[in-house]
Image (cartoon, rainbow, N blue to C red):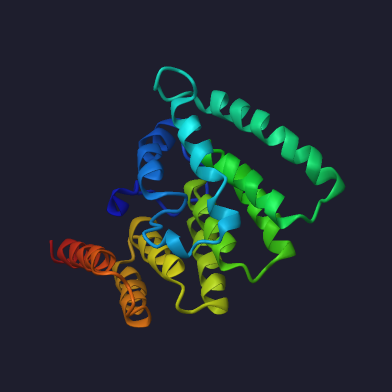
Length: 217
């Protein structure tokens, strides 16, 4: 569930292996980004290639056991190789860059993933879905402030984007311990997206109640 995202400090150092493993199950449940309750609005170029890659990375062909980070890196590199060949002749192909980012996201190589998403945004800076994905990669790599900055940029292009608002709230709560900031993001999410389904709305409201209860305690 989205409120199970592993807490981390505000420092910029990369996560240790045990922290990545603790987060892995959450990644598989909630999708590519931190919350992504609303990934139905996600760009197909971001969403499509990653689901199968993420599933295979989780098992790693090792009887369902979680592979090591080195093993996942090798799997990512192998899967990325043919795309990198294509990229040589078409270096500004945004779809290829996003697919590469998805591969490295699925195998928890978040620094590499962020690099490819960043290159895709240099081609298409107004793509909010890719920018939200970049923010998630930065967050999982330990760059909380960078993740928040990317989500704020995404909201400049689309102030009502549900994914950006949801994830901004999650990162402010989990990464910055900023309860007020989290509540403000989720309040704006509910206000600007009246079309949310009842279950999604209830999930956001439950998170808000949890934050408020935490503040009281």
